[in-house]
Length: 258
Image 1 (spheres, rainbow, N blue to C red):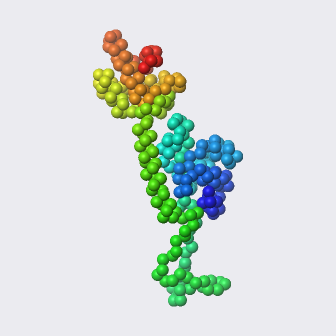
Image 2: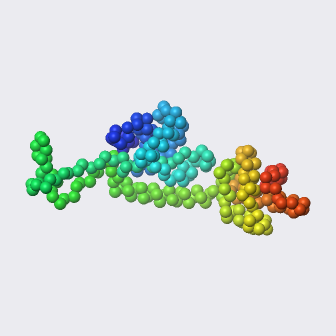
Image 3: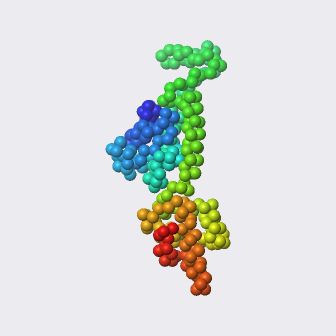
């Protein structure tokens, strides 16, 4: 939070956005990464509306003071994908104050820079400028090392989350897409051709179950339900000499126990 407090007014003139940034920084790690409070939480912290908070977060992201971080961090703590807030990383370097510069004139043979009220000593010619060790303005070597460690841990967390996705049970949602391997395996087990599940069948399947949020299943389970429906529709259609009706929903009555 001290980093956000030290930002010059010229860097962030929007007082409401600064307030949101201060509160967001309170949830970040020591290196500024991994902050994921919900808009509701930030609204309570700032006294602003959730709509205003979301708008100010966009302002902060456009200004380069924050950016979206590793979303797997939130996934580790919150199972339901539709309730996971966005993970943000604070751009500590972006918000740092610029280091002072020296202006050496062509006739400066003494190593001094003339000022209106006297002579100010310059650094020794050829010497490197001393680094700013303030953690509020510059990422230190220790922080860079910590950031690398956090990235490695986040990668492990992401791997763990991905390995658990197939076992996680969830309700159908509008942006669901079947896992390619799970769907391919179920098609092979059912003895259907590879192109047996058209896009229209997937849309009809999703449309029916989106309206039934009480029905939950794993990723592989949803693929199994989908292939079983397609298989039944194909059998029904072949017996009647018709093309399978991908928009029919009568099949759903037989899936309750699957």
